[in-house]
Length: 113
Image 1 (cartoon, one colour):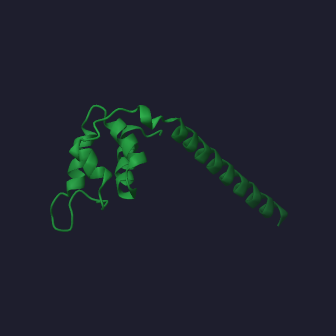
Image 2 (tube, rainbow, N blue to C red):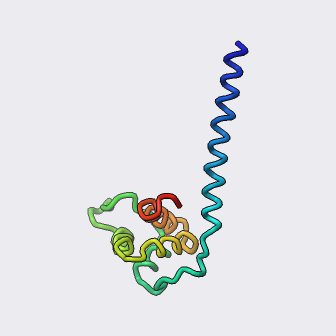
Image 3 (cartoon, rainbow, N blue to C red):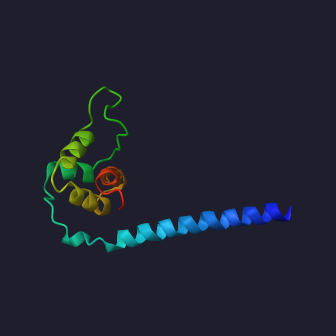
């Protein structure tokens, strides 16, 4: 019985120590970004669409069978040479739905972040 309790205790300690290191690392990377220094065209209509969107479309085709405007804007920003800068800015300046698009873009462009 003691062996089972000790094994479970060690497992819990191991799991929490790994999670703590992961979250600490992500917060450290998150704090290191200087968003004010990132230069993008903030008047870009695609950027404004994602920044002010009221929906997050989980798929490329909506219920009505059309491609949502947000998905088109995401694709156009994703194709830009400095797309990662747009997504960094979106992460800090957009509403919650826009932040989801930013995180999707950063997942593919800067996975470590």
